[in-house]
Amino acid sequence: MYYIVGTKDELIQRGVLVEEGHKRLLLVGGRPVAPARELNPSAFTRIDRVQDRVINLPDGEYTIFSRQNPAYASPLVSKGGKISGGLRVDQPDKFWAPSRFLILVKA
Image 1 (cartoon, rainbow, N blue to C red):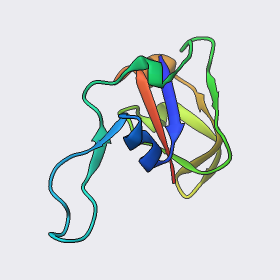
Image 2 (image 1 turned 60 degrees about the vertical axis):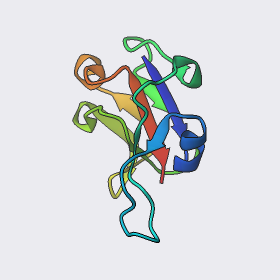
Image 3 (image 1 turned 45 degrees about the vertical axis):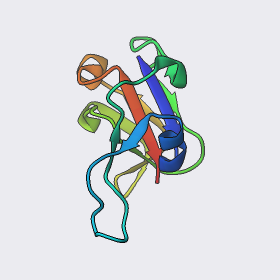
């Protein structure tokens, strides 16, 4: 399993996130962002899903941007739906089932 943490702009520059689709407004506004279709494991931090049940995060507030269901994990600190401090994976089989790549974007 793999995870990556960063701002939206950093993750776009690293090719983890891509802008897809049309701009929300014709001349202004950004395009929707989604995980890249092909993710390179070397851009991520590798972890063991059984042994590494807590993912420590740098200072800041984060949201899960990938397909994992947050119902199977507990934030160490939660403010308004944002994750701070770290993320404890309570049910690894269910949490990692949608994707082996976890993308956390700094709010």
